[in-house]
Length: 114
Length: 111
Image 1: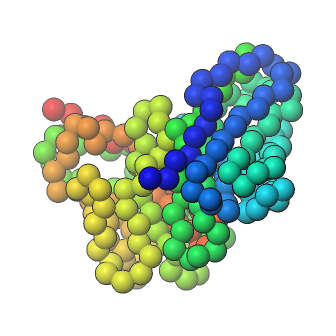
Image 2: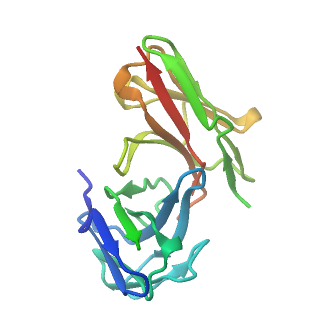
């Protein structure tokens, strides 16, 4: 089975702190994604990456950055956390460009910024 | 631009009743289509997917979905709902490397 692992399930951070959310996948997928999920808004794409050291902005990249130094690992960084970044963050991965791709999700990371 | 619409924000059904969750998409060609389920506090689990061929797709947990090109729809169905089906359901489309999700339908199952 595909495994997407998010290392932190629940975090509480203070306003202004730098926050790292880590994600690892074990299926050698090229694509990796970070989504944010909020009630009534569904899943919104923050950033995605289709290769090591490559990244593309999604729909809501402001206030976030990402890092992909290894193929299996994709990190989301909140440079200076704010209360409006309190949310559920979902990491996902998929193969690249085969046409019949499926996206697989991690369990999610609940972040509360106080 | 691609978009996915799930017109029902919340649905309540009785246990044992049938279920249909609606999904409409906007895309120039036929995209790849998916349904995911999310239990409280968890990630999204794939229920089923449609890439081509038979327009009626079977998935896990007794779910099925039917692709109707003329209606740009991919509705999810289950003949008899179980209490454990209570969850959030997301429809998604993919024209290729990107995935677009609906805003979800929350399902409540009453005894």
